[in-house]
Length: 434
Image (cartoon, rainbow, N blue to C red):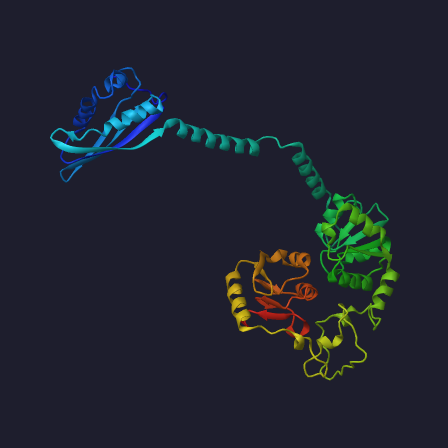
């Protein structure tokens, strides 16, 4: 008998067989051909179909256990779907095989072309992924890759402090001083090569040396940290001009138009001192340590409510006095935690341990969002309002607490804090308190 090629078969009939007795494989095949003979007419006679190659070799697998035989029947077919279904149904009329009762049940008729089609689709996906990964990128990707590599190559380490800088420091008579490496990258990308970074809050000696020889423009972020840097650098070096990013923005995220606008709006160092003096009744720009909120007053210092002094954030200096002083501490106006809030905060902080993540909650203690701790400051700046509490796996520092105060956040829950609770309007809660 002919055997149909697996390549040419379109359908496969899968059937199960249960026999109440012990029979062999040839008995089952003989029953299939014998009991279906003449049943479907000459055109669907199994022997003729197999001889012409339209039905493949009938595979029978049987297993005998405890006096009963079970197995499977597999019939490949190149007939159309209707004829294949008729052949499959014809198997179910077999009720005896030899002396034993039998039952044949067609489980499925599998379309071989579907499985082949699925294989083609999956293989095509794999080939397309390889093509996209290994072949030449489009022109936009090439341009971005080249531009990025050029920007990185242009950054040099300048001076004995190895400050990140553009390649045009020595050639230019004017130098732009920024806070960090990312700021240098952004200005290089927009065509400014006479830029150098301080790499931190303190002014390095390299920048101080440059201030003796070149015209210096101090370009800082539009936040409280920018104010502190202006005070620090102006107290140490000879700065000619000062400019700031727009409020709430950092130099590294400014577009080209914003950079040009900020540089056109620069003011002289003398004007900057006058503006800061106007906001500081002590007129001690050269002594920024007096302005820091983390500097405690002596225990015997009396505070005169009628003549309040101001800190770097222009809050009464009574805010940093000890509780024994007659002036009310900031914490007296704070909103204390309810038992529900305390339990909720403790549970959420425990879930955050080890994740370096942060939850932002509204006044109904619903989660507004979960962000990485490194993005928390930026997120709070963008929200600006509607935040009731912040819970994060990290240490509460001054910058974060200042932003929380501006956003009227009631509670900041952290693993630890560098800001005493009495020095902030925000209720700062650590894991030990929960």
